[in-house]
Length: 271
Image (cartoon, rainbow, N blue to C red; front, side):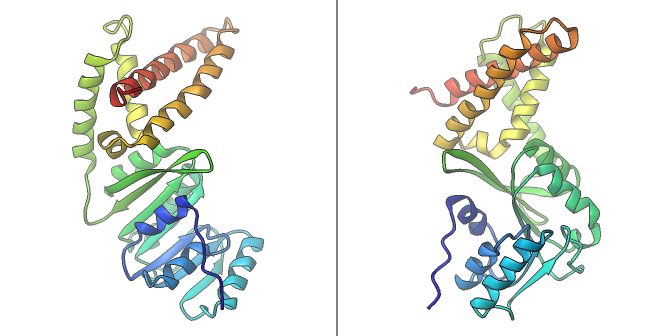
């Protein structure tokens, strides 16, 4: 008897957002643990598991064959969505890759993407760009959640063609947040640096996620802490430079850092 696939918290969260009985495309599948888990838990109708690297492709094939799932999970070697034909899948999962890579994958295969109704994404970097780009393209933000795994906070974002919040709604929410932040955050010379504060908050809003801010959980508090630490280190290094462009960048980073620290105090007042 085969052992049950044991997904970590991150991939379990990804799995929880896959629509029931979907035809799934898992891009960057690695060992194909996610589609195997979903099939064996009767969550999906079938899957195409894609990886661009020969090693993971072979590992995925071996794992699926050993469990007798070749009829339901098709493993393909190739780049992004290119091995998939339009209409073959109705939901996509992409986890553990950079956000810019995800957007490149989508832009390279618009005909395949046009037939997909749900995206379950776990980007590692460029999260704000992913949110804005897909919302600009007409996708709806259906859900997003933060999850802790091995001491790090990850974000899973779900986009839908059918339900969720449009860019216009989220932009209005951003403006409401900006007013509250501007009133409550303690920043010197707020009037002088109003545009800089607005730009810094917009970066934070789209990177962390509108729904994550609306429904704060303990993982959000940790994400604030994890975001501030590297910024403080970078600012310390920038202070050693006399170059004007470095000083401008340092000032921008200081505003972002202060906003993150003040928002943490506001959203988690018990600390």
